[in-house]
Image (cartoon, rainbow, N blue to C red; front, side, top):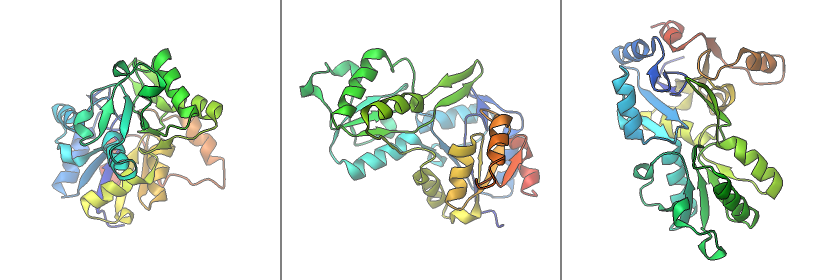
Amino acid sequence: MAIGGVLFDIDGVLVTSWQPIAGAADTLRVLADHQIARAYLTNTTTKTRAQIATLLTDAGMEVSADEVITAAVLTANYVRDRYPEARCYLVNSGQIAEDMDGIDVVYPHEVTGSDADAPDVVLLGGAGSEYDHVTLSRVYDWMAKGVPVVAMHRSTAWNTAEGLRVDTGMYLIGMEQTSGRKATAVGKPAPEGFLAAAGRLGVEPEEMYVVGDDLNNDVLAGQVVGMAGVLVRTGKFRQDTLDRWAADEFAMQPNYVIDSVADLPELLDL
């Protein structure tokens, strides 16, 4: 197929704990040399898109902030569209207000927990120490009472140099099952981010490759909107997960599986 652009996941594909994965910088240079457009779609919510671009550039990859699409940016767009002028209670590990322009945000330390302080919308970003017992209890109480909950993503874990860390989706599973209410997730694997990336590059999804280490959130989600999916065996990739998935004859399979992003130029015949 014609290569209109390549959409990369970041953590586990290009870097681990912001340290470059071998061959990642070389791959991006090859794409640049062939004038193939790139975009970066991430559920990372601990940093702004400008900070992410700086970290990648410091790791040897020339990336600009406007090439990065974060779950926070997508969430802000969603809230502006669905809940204009809403008072939003934000629980997130990291200062990302810069990427949520125009959203009325209040933080856990600004709320007493009384009914009078109930927000219009609860926003859940990435998990961290902010996800303490009192805060989660407060979120559950509001959720059970019907306050809409918008999650920036449903990721259950992410990979670090010290191993896996539990993420927002793990908490959502319990709160949704117990409250009988469903949160709306805006980041991957929802289609909005993939379509936004295609729109930014000015190409059809069918002309794009998506490269990720997460079979469901990255690769298959991209394939659903028409992109060619490339699964890499780095980051959170687990062979047993792929084996179980491959054993299901009715399940969608990744278009390609490669050892790492360093093998992408060969796959694309560059």
